[in-house]
Length: 345
Image 1 (cartoon, helix red, strand yellow):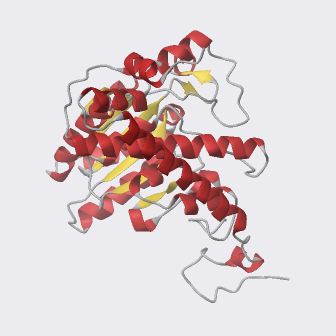
Image 2 (image 1 turned 180 degrees about the horizontal axis):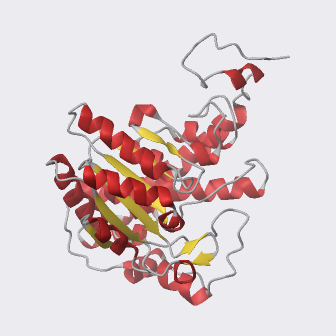
């Protein structure tokens, strides 16, 4: 017998007492449902070979993005690795543009030239998903340097997977960010596995936040299955950054319900482990708080769900009906120089 929504929500509860306003909980619910439904549809389309290449889904990790979005401003910069569909969706990028990018269509947010791993939207200050492990970490520090240099009062939040903390670029960036007191929040989304290899098998330091302590960087672990905990940690880090006190390193302890990518059957973990995290589902936790505090009724939440399903379906139709890029697009968006002398023969 299928488990009811109420049963799932009760399993996912931590504390029904609201720590934030009704508006914030409703925003989290709608934001995370869009991320979840979009990713579920992307996985389905990948199975149908409508989406090709690499595809890394965010299912289970939604609170990592949603909780941070409500703690920051629209002028702050965002950069992440290649599990990058959900962040721009939460920030306000059109699902049509993200889905079209997955389809490699000209109407995609990277004009069909980036695909799943390189979503980018300057309009919402999302400075891209990046395919080279750890490459975005020094880039995030550089974005923060620009904000400090220009005295904007803004910051850059820089996400990475747990595999990236073994990259030398991270340690160089940490050192420079602390030395120059850059307004950057470094976030490791620790879902337990660098591809298919557990943190315990790849790192002598398994409490990853402690890596920041060697640079005297304020660092802490965060229960990233809860929007509330994510928001609070990011808000504290943002306050330090805007006060000129420099970077923070946050270890978001989270979990992905799917494999590393669509080609990963995830046989390296147990069903019991997966189920234990499903029982902490961030969407169901928020849903439980909403219902317990009468912020919305079951019917009102169902209406939101139906609206999101329609929105995702519209994005599929938009992508299906969009054209592929013109071959000439190979030579655009590479150099600032408009008439760069390419050899085209």
